[in-house]
Length: 211
Image (cartoon, rainbow, N blue to C red; front, side, top):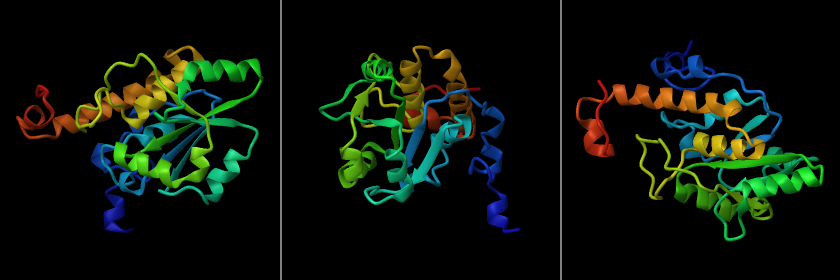
């Protein structure tokens, strides 16, 4: 066995000591979710996209930057599911309104998330013509995220799994079924903070060290 590969969990892809699999719970949800992950996020130790793909039965994780000619994504976009992209475009509408419109038309709705920094997500959107053709939705009345070990240039910036949690909760009108996503996310954050030398978390992230 490759020694380097053996140091990483084959399921979640994180280092064995940081494996998040014990915190993952399967969630009953029939909402199709597509996570488009920038290549720079694949090896990111504090990335959260895998929490979604491991927890949700109808979640696809696709890696790339320009998805215009991505066969897997285009096949999904041409299915009977009507997808919207969670992205702050000028034309974005509240996700709850979009979901209600789908229910009134008896059309199944699906969600697409971009997994990357704000700059990377913007580039993915600008390069991908098929994404620009989709309706865009946004979250409303969301508090600041809990991504305490990764800085965001946007006030109240959310991690990918937090964005997925809030979006799916809004679509379902109930956050309780999706709470395991946040549990796994918080456990991952707590583990990473505990690995930091004393004072590092406070100096670099403006928080208080945990005992």
